[in-house]
Each structure stands twice: as C-alpha cells, then as structure tokens.
Length: 235
Length: 235
DNA sequence: TCACTCAGAATCGTGTAGGAAATTTCCTGT
DNA sequence: ACAGGAAATTTCCTACACGATTCTGAGTGA
Image (cartoon, rainbow over all chains, first blue to last red; front, side, top):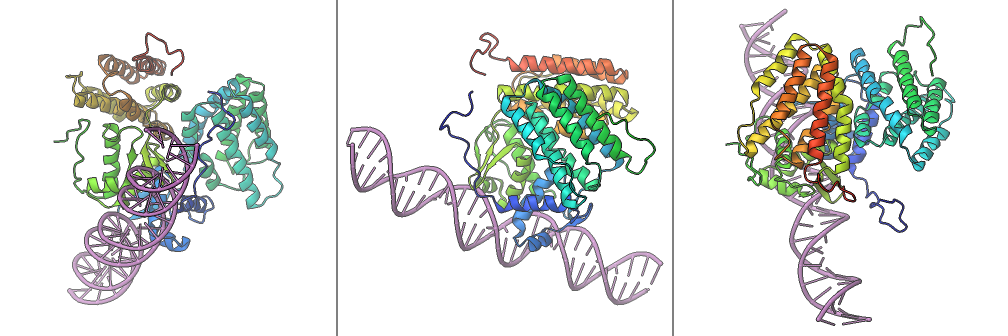
C-alpha cells in the first residue's frame, strides 16, 4: 500500500512512558556503563530504593531483561548481571554476525527504497570523526555504530533478520567488554564503503564490504594485546 | 489428564517452585492452543483470577512474553496476543530459517560429537508415524519437529544461532496458523535424510537436505488454500 | 427518526505497601 | 576447625489505592 497518504492515520503517538520502561532503560544503561559490574547481584529492593520506585516495576523490567539475556535469574536467589562474553562467545557472536549481516547488506543494496537510502546517508552525515578520547566520545561513536548496523539490517527488508540482530545486543556486549578501543577512523571508512555499495545498488560489493568490516573488527578486537602484524586494512 | 483440546478450561496450577514460570508456560500454552485467540485481549486480572493467582506473577510472565513478541503491549490499555503471521511475515520467517538452518545443519554434520549424534538418533527413534488425526497427535508431531530443529541448531555448536532460532518461536507461530496439516510422513522422511547426512558427517548433503526440507514445508504451507487463484490482490 | 455528543460508571492497568517463605550469613558449641 | 542453628536479608506473592481508558446510555440537534 502507498504510504504517506495525506491525512492518513499515523499510528497513535507513544503514550506516556511507563515507569517500568524507564526502569528498564535505566538498568540497561547501568549494565552498559559498568555501574552494575558483570556478574554482580541485582537486588530488586535495592534497585527500587536506589531508583525511588517500588519493587514491582523493577521486577517487570528485570523479567524483560532476563528474556534479553542481559541478566540471569536464579530462582529464589535473585538476579545477576550476565557475565562478560568469553573469547568463545565473542567468536560465536561474530560468526553469527558474519552469517546474517553480509546477507543483510546485500539485500539492502538490492531493494532499499529512496527513503531508506536517504536515512542511510543521513546517518553517515551525522557521524563525525572521533573528536576526543573521552568516554562520552567513544559512547557516541558506539551509538552510531549500533544505529548503522541496525539500519542496514532494517533496509534488508527482513524483520526476522533485523530482530535477530537486535536481540544479540552485540554492541552492548562488545562495548561492555572494551569500551576504549576498536572504534575509530577505520570503522567510519568501512561504514562509508558499505554505504557506497548500498547506494550504488551493488549487492556483491555491499556483502563483501560488510564481511570485511566484521572480519576487521573481529580480528582487531579478538586480539587486543597482540601487536604482531599490521592489519591488512582491507577496509 | 493433560487434555489440550482447543477451548479447554483453564486448570489450576500445581505450584512447583516459581509461580511466575508456571504462569508463563500456562499462557504460552493458552496461546498455542487457541484458547487465547490471535489478537484477543489478555486481561491481567482476568488471567490472575482464572489461574487462581495474584496479578503480579501474571504481569511478570506477560513482560517476558512481550519480549518474546508473543503478546504485544499497549501502554495503559493492556496486552493482546500477537496476531497470526501474515503471508509476508511467514515468507520472511522461512527466508530467515533458510538463512540459518541449512548452515546449522552443515555445521552439525561437521562437528557433532558422539553424544550429540546419539541424541539425534534418539530423537528420531522416539518419533513414530502419525497414528491418528487427533489434535493431540498433531501436537505431539509438532513437538518432535520443534525438538528436532532445535537439536540440529544446538549440534551446530553456535549458541547464537540456536538462540536466534528458538527466539523466532517459529513452530508456535506455524502451529497457531494451521495445526491440522503440514506434518506427516514426508516431514519424517526429510528429517531422516537430514539425520543421515549429519551422522555421515556430510555437510554438503546435510545443508542441501535441510534446505529442501524447509523449501518443501514453505511451499506446501504457504499455498494451502490459494493454490488455484494465485492471490492476485490479496496476500 | 437518526446521528452525534457528552457525562457517569464500570473496568482495567499501574504502582505501593506489607507479609510469608526461603536463603545466606554469622555466631556458638563441641 | 567443623557442624548446627538462629537472626537478618531478600525474594516472591498477595492485597489494596489511584488513575486512565472504555463502555453505556441519556440528551440534543438536525
């Protein structure tokens, strides 16, 4: 159906956000920012007191976070934040990303409409080179990285792929592992290359660029301390 | 005793350990068995009364079901069961399955250990040909189908792929769409073919068998009633 | 007569407070 | 040093108050 019919009923605007949603986002931020350290106990009443609410919305938020596997629940013992990803789990995560994201990039190049391509360009325009080495600067760049990859998945036109990608919460896990490296000019140039391929409607190039991007990130981040070889700089 | 016919009364729950988990499973079963019809409103207090518990564990269960996208929440208006999958969504679901499951079958054939292969054989031994046309018979076969595909995903050795597959809840959605067809001797023979390829450590054959299995299921189930008209306007 | 509007009430979602059961911790006795 | 037990903490559930939404039905105007 044609979208953008004049005067058409756009979906009802988001109602007043509920407390449980705010609590949910707050806890997610606490986990991402290491305020709640990996494996730490998350007391329902403690969080409720700290946030100034009653335990019920905290319980609801934690139930959702448990479905997202950001916290784990031990019956009658409470919640704990999920531990940091092990080396094997990170490998596994990138293997999964390599399975779905290059595919998504190719599909995005194949059938992204004008509005989608404009959104992609806007996202690339909005990102600047990392200005400083502050925590907030890294966090802003990580947010761009998240939006970029979600957008590519969305442009692929498969809701299942987009949701499967989002539900990995891969950027949260990676940022939690090491928020102080891995994002820089190389990342941005690789994003630009993917964007160019999508805008050129070149599925093969888009898939290859995304694959190279993920492999570079995987290679660089999985071996953070070994500086034996300069990367192939395939990006 | 565990009758699961559609329209069955909601029974009281034998409290084992945690009420919220039982409520969660109970609601999931109610959705799958069409006791809660697609799009129907799910009243928190109503469910609490029918299950004989207080609203709090029901809210916790619904919060988790919302993360799994089995129910949708409209703020200040309550929960509704997710609508049935549209033709496009079902297409999308099978596209996603075709992306990850053949890959998983190949990996399972590559590196499934002895214990994993024994579990696969046991699952195939445990399933018999459909004995009757009763609802319970179909449901049992659907349960085997679920276990089989989850097991293949698990044998692939990638926790991300397994979770991504499980989180689609594809068997629940498909069963909800039409629980009265699509599973039969053909399904079992295709499962046997996949099993054989995995046991023979033949990744190429396993991948091809899984792909053929999904394409057959997709083709057969996507065109159950509109095989004559071809659906010119309506999806 | 019919359609529309608006007030009132019932209904339901949302958050709070409190109590029962279980686990953990710490202390004591041997 | 180790086993046993009681207090403290916490989880989990229930019961209740408040607010928003929706339904009902009477009233008004065309």
